[in-house]
Image 1 (spheres, rainbow, N blue to C red):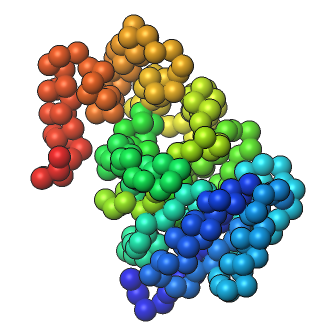
Image 2: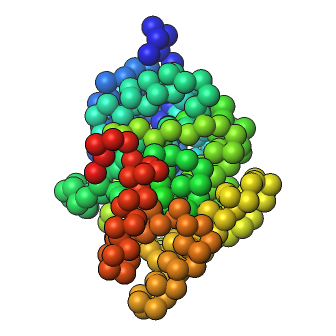
Length: 307
């Protein structure tokens, strides 16, 4: 990192997460990086959120907040991105956390390569009480085809980007439920993305979270990859990777749990784009096929010494 310390803007969309948002703000304020600004875009919460925001803003000049009715999370994020002043930015949900060092490591990655406009780390999964359950499994290095067949996932809670890039691609599109993923899809056709092998966030699972609507997430991924004008113009390899990704996404998010359904989706994905075998959970592969999968991952994706 150079002597010049660029400002980092963290946009926090918020609605009725008063029991979590204090921990979210603490996780940002405790970062070992400055300057930083925190813009909380609250959609007129009716719980204790506003009281928490007022207390934080009185003690920490980095925190600025607005509480007014909005048109949903995409509207909140876009308003925050327009108000932000930083060179770099992140979007953190009001119930998730940054892990120590996340911001400084992200800035170092972005400053280290001007061709990289989007960086992301891994995410822990925590429960309602903050207990770590696991690390999210999507840990292959970034490549456009891997993103499209779901071999690597860009977690919103662990992603940072150049603010100008987010504005150039239009921010979050409210027509999609998975607004963050849609923005990453537009970004990867305009910049290089990079995964950093560090845990940058904790993604909280709890009964009230927005992304528990599994079927809607699956249908949205299928729709956004079919409708993407960038993908329509992309090389056939990427279009096939996206088609395989639609099959593999269905395994995780389609409510059908029949073995026949899962086996059929895997077979069609591998026939469409064979490298997508790297994204198939080992437990879903027939005996012996996982050996092929592990060999494929080691040969093409994993650096020496990786597990």
